[in-house]
Image (cartoon, rainbow, N blue to C red; front, top):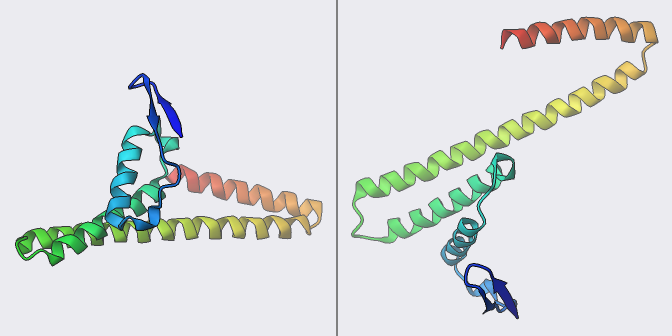
Length: 142
């Protein structure tokens, strides 16, 4: 199969049947980085921070595996790689907790709305007045 490359102003032969299973994790991460470098995000909304953090963790973990096996790498550099991997893992944990909290809040809001819908209209209005006032006060503190 051939694809046109505007950069080269020519067609490039591409094998769509490449067996990716034969590549090591390190090879796949390098290929991913090469592709991502050629397909940069145009703006922040195009950037998947969760995906990027996971890919960064995998790359750091792979580097850690390589460095720890190398007898010539100084101990302080091994420690730096281990700390970087631990920091990325910590960031992933925080992100996972934030996502969990956000999803939990959405479920709570959904249950609240369902409960409100079962109340008489006058009680709904009274609750919403108090709720809106409390939310307004809370948001002004930020």
